[in-house]
Length: 580
Image (cartoon, rainbow, N blue to C red):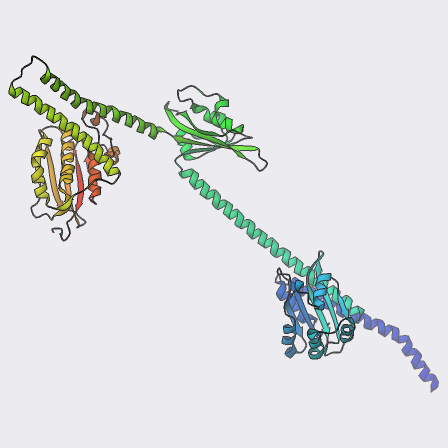
């Protein structure tokens, strides 16, 4: 009997190492399965907050009775992202205790020390360890009293030398005491969690960087589009010339000015070789504004000639400036060319106007002086009738001179919006009747026809100024239509109802379509016909200013060779209604 018992003891002793090894192997296998499952969870999503919450639930109850996972956010506070407890009723208590904790708060919270030092904290006997380390505060006492913590492991989540958060594993209900093996498993779990958080954040940063890059690229493209639109629409010619290659980019205005396409591969020496001095002398290459800008100079408003392929010399104001790279080196040149043709034309127009004004002023003055000299000459006795005729000529020339001066003054007043108007209710029948004799004189050898209905509503107008408009239009019609033709003055209610429209029509030479838009400009006269007709080009400009001062509009319709019809509108007097 004794031998049998001894035999069983020896057999049990011989099997103990084998059973212990099997138990260790099974425990290791369970750890591997746990880590594999945790790794699978951590790799399943790029939402690390949701992933870490899943890991916390995976750790309970295998590794802990409750678990919290915190992440260090941009505000340098530890924020709870995952919590789990074997007793769902206590999970909210854990969540309440795991409030956000700023690292700089100075709290004696163990998890803060873990995050600050990057070192794990291991409490095999939680209450005993805290009592020896420091007197427990309210938070620690609550952990001990309400959660019944027996053993605890707190570990930092560290990746690439940076602390990304912290994980806390605790036993309570199970009364389990953690050992070195549990600490090693917890450290491996913390390492994998940290790698997952780091990878996810790297991916998010890469995505945000890509988004920022795309936004920057879109903004750059939008700026290029705006710049392109500006360059395409600006009326000035703009050239950009690369310093290293001499390649050139030109906007449409520059290509139009040079009169030829400017491809990027065309060197600036060949393209701007069309530039010359204002007197027509060729420019040396070193004298080009672009060449000087490439040497670092700034050229401002230099007048040059652009030689068009058709041989015309187009006056242009040229400016050029170097464009420097971040190192201060000249990377290119921007050249701006402003076509001065219109300004030169205005100068010529002013010169022509001065010449014309001198002629218009000189003619009556010469006539007046000649008559006065004849009357004052000693020994000359003229009959009374001849004297009256000469004095009448002096009066006419003086009137012409006075009218010319008055027109110039009124143009100045209209431009300054200072032309006085004596507005009153008036009927166009009375107005035309009052000015009829003067209109007949202006019509000269033309047949003047007046068609103004008696029932036309009254207008609010300045009698004298509106009469002046009609007189100018009749005089203009007489100048540009052959003798014997009819000039017709009409008035009728406007189509818009609150106005009356007056028209003056002739059967004269008409106005070319290209010049219709300019006939109301000061000093402008229709080419060819204007050279044969006396005047300074103020009559229609005055008509426009007077009509607009009344609140009306003036326009012209014309067919070359068939005549012109000038129309202007006047507002009805208050209380008047347009006739049907």
